[in-house]
Structure formats: C-alpha cells, structure tokens
Length: 121
Image 1 (cartoon, helix red, strand yellow):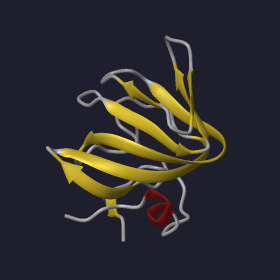
Image 2 (cartoon, one colour; image 1 turned 180 degrees about the horizontal axis):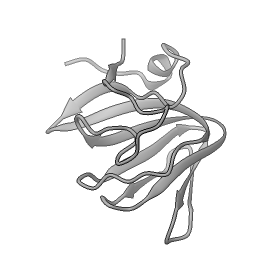
Image 3 (tube, helix red, strand yellow; image 1 turned 135 degrees about the vertical axis):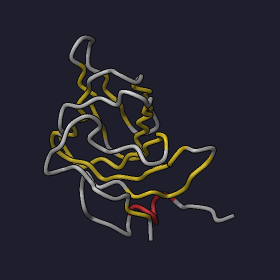
C-alpha cells in the first residue's frame, strides 16, 4: 500500500491531456492529468467517468445539457454514452476515475488519443 500526495504527484510531469494512472481499485483507474485548452468531443459507450478538480477550474461541455463548471474541490460524473468535451481556460489539475483500460478519447481517434496508459512515476 502506497499513499499518493497529489501536489507532489502532479509535480512529476508537465505533459497536458496525458493522464497518468496513480492507482487502481475494483477495476477502476485513478488517473491524474494536467489540462489546458479544449479536448475533443467524445463519449464512452460503456463507462461512466468522474472528473475531480484538484487545482484550477474545468468546464465539461455537453451537447444536450447545460455545461458543468467545476472549481477546485468539485467533481461531476459524466454518465456512459453522454458526449462531452473538457475545457480549461488555464491549466487545471484533475483526477479521473474510470474503468481501467478506458481510452482517453472514448469513441474518437485524434492526435490526443493515447495508445497505452502511462503510469505515475
């Protein structure tokens, strides 16, 4: 069992939109990511996705519902099948909770698609 200090963990990488697996439990991955700008519109057909803001602010844009704005200490769960796009005006540090092996861009292939999960070092 190893604890993770979030501030120290986020200091170990600079790459944006490139989640790092920090832990796993019950088939779920806990991922850390730094984000800024707009991600791609996508959905996860078979997985809910939790976005938790550690530092900064994040907006989850939704096609058919009002956008959800998150500040540090807040989270939202995007249900499976809901098309969404994360957007951060300035760099934000976020935690993602989703089934292990979930592709970061869901049903979309783009230059931001990760072909393998990166682990926190």
